[in-house]
Length: 359
Ligand SMILES: [Zn+2]
Ligand SMILES: [Zn+2]
Image (cartoon, rainbow, N blue to C red; front, side):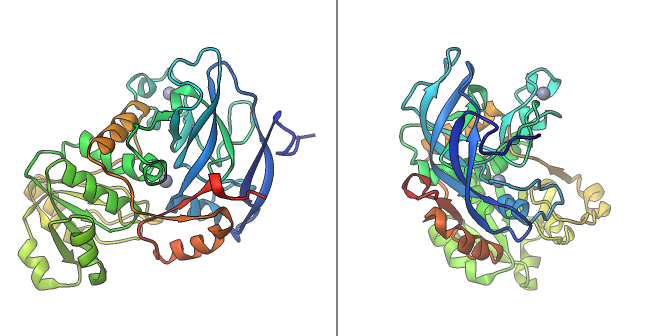
């Protein structure tokens, strides 16, 4: 008979889990594996609340295996290291992002692209090769192979830094890969949520002119005054939109609802690049004329490899970039999820796990 989550491993852990597609989270005693020779154990202090957590809790993608403990923007302190661990020592400030394992042998792993490994194991709602489930950061401790652990730079706060482990790398990696970092060029950021607000900051740090493209005129002053964007474009203002056509070099599209690409492609100059990062539940229509006639490119991207994630954290620390967060206690998570569903957050909830009762 399968063992209960509480008994399958030797180390007691406490988290908050959803048991069904109501998505309601409540206290969940479970267990973590013994710290292996390549592992570090992390006392979790902060856990960011990503939109994927909400989708997973509600089984929006049809792949949720309950009970589920979400959380893949994890920041904390190392409490145990295995004998083979060279990268970390007890007391180090560290993070864990979206993945906790991969095969380490395939072509992607060999090129530091563990995020595209066919055997990549997600931080939660996934299974290790021995069949045991992964549980994420809405919990007090986690045990992870050192290869999948990131070092927090000394000057980076753990609370505002945690969301970079998903939101930060998701926008940084495509900007590097697609060559969207040339100083003085013009970046458009479509959608100003968890990903978009970090994209604005990273874009400015690369020396780009940044325009936020949004459906919500209310966000204009925040985009410019608080986040440092240079311009703001409301998609419903045809005159302004027309004036901006053909003026943008790169667009990071973070919109996860089904939306038309034609207006975004119209904003791009010849040779412009549009990278889509949201995951709409239905395919988007791809207009070919503007691509062909303007040599434009549409691409996608999913988080980033371990090496690049560390590079992103170091880059953000150097430029004093963190996410703008609202810190909550664990027992406020259900209300926070309701607000997140309405995009009512500036711009990321982070759970203060270290100062929360998990029971
Ligand atoms: Zn995420
Ligand atoms: Zn692999």
